[in-house]
Length: 332
View: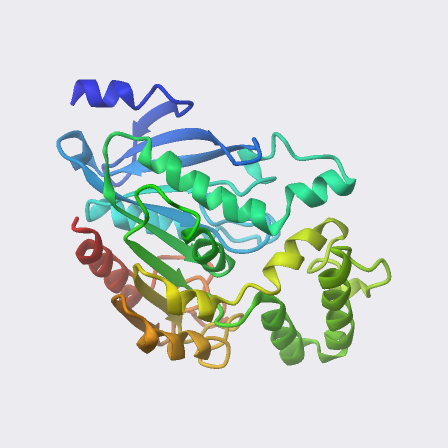
């Protein structure tokens, strides 16, 4: 194994290695996206990887300025969703690669100052390409079984994982986990969310989506309540994201798939916002399972008295099904 470990340090990748709290090996990696943007992440290897090849899964975070651990600076609590998933999977013998989203944390080195360059940097296709680049980086590490990899996307990350799958041509992922992911295109989901919580903004959101579809430009006269959803540089992102249909993509996905959802999710509401996924699953040719865990939040934690379920451990039912399903699907 000494030779294998040495070879893994050659291509761009190894920055540091240190022991993880769960007894795993944590390695910081740096890799280039398709457009040359420099991304940084964490490869977490189970200890058994020192003796044998192990499966590996790329973890893709949800919307907003979310880092590799699943934390968002706009949320005061530490969520640590992706860190918790990575630790759980290491305990059952599965490696994970999670990374800071482009423009966030250690992946913000190449962030353009403003204008059209920033709009291109944050285009939907760029985020899709980052998932593919992360999967390629996972395969560059010699401990990983090349034909036992997967993608796990949370919320918007599930959409990105689905969109990225077809573009992975070498050693395609064998399993895909879609966690808290909507069954509708993102543009329709935002409209549904606004209709529930801010119906006075629905008309302006529709106007913004129509303008973006036509010109890739965000209208300058949107009300303040929509500024976080449609920042000025997000036209190219929304032009792709608003029309990507996850149910259609899921129906044609050739890999095994697990759909996970929290029954107390207030952001992507069961069953209203996920029904197209449930309808797509029986039409698939590949294996698939669905779990809607009662009492679990959007972040796959027990919802608790506040209903948000941001901090704390994973919901036990979610953790058990996720670990068991991936062990079976990837042969860990």
